Length: 380
Image (cartoon, rainbow, N blue to C red):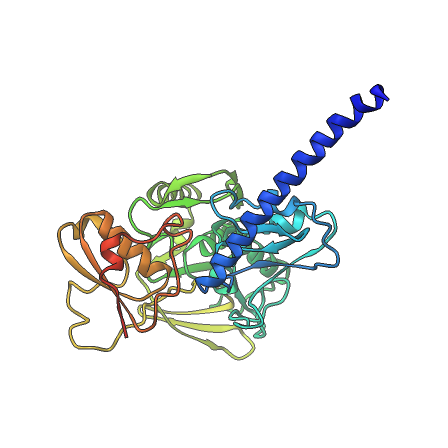
């Protein structure tokens, strides 16, 4: 009897510790889900997991695999099953699906309530228009690592179908020089394609538009002509400097067309496409759209919006120290801008046509704007 107690007691202690730990995790997950619902943060922004409750065995492998944990509570166990408890903090890593031993996770875009706001693409990133491809944020892949991979894979697919371009035609026109467009440019250079990359601003696209010194997280990625690169947490400036070095060393700089805006993409019969820009006209067999979702900001159409003091993105909050700033909007970008101005010593007033139903997530490290911002909110 004493021998049985010697073995049984440790087992009971371990089992009790496990149950207590699991209960605490479940309480945390429930609280995270309730907070997301209360704040209206229930629609994932991009690629996200859908969990089949019948297949799920509640092992928690997906929770442990999520790279956003523990800074953000994305997945959790409730009632012995995995749940997406922080939908807007999910940015489409896809590690949860790979880690699930029961194949209970499917990665999808859109939701039943919000629908799918991305182009319909084939497995090779080709749209319903033959020869027109989409990669990166416009295709739903907002994460830098995913966008880099999509840009490379899209050009690889174009190379597999590549045929001799008509006289005077390029093999490819890439629109956008963000992560997807830059990786696509390197892949096109690797495949010795005749191509140009058109970007209305500078190398980096959406990354170039980030606020000064903003931290950018990216997992190891494979870049054509370069190989594997590994950045964990780095600043916007460091990442752009790294890309600029690659651009120069690989010779792809000669194919880049900066400060040139695409105005139209039209069919050129059976030959391909005519891409008209603010500076030139290009004919190509294929077009890859890697323009992201930010593009050209939508204006308010009110008097005075073209004055020099009116801007459409926050680059350096320090320039507003001691000044009063009106931030128009109520999403993550607006809240991030308001918090940045307040932290720099400015006074931010937030104007939004609806109630404040969102809170900053990844953009501001999961914190609310400064008190003087919330005190200055104006809704209409």
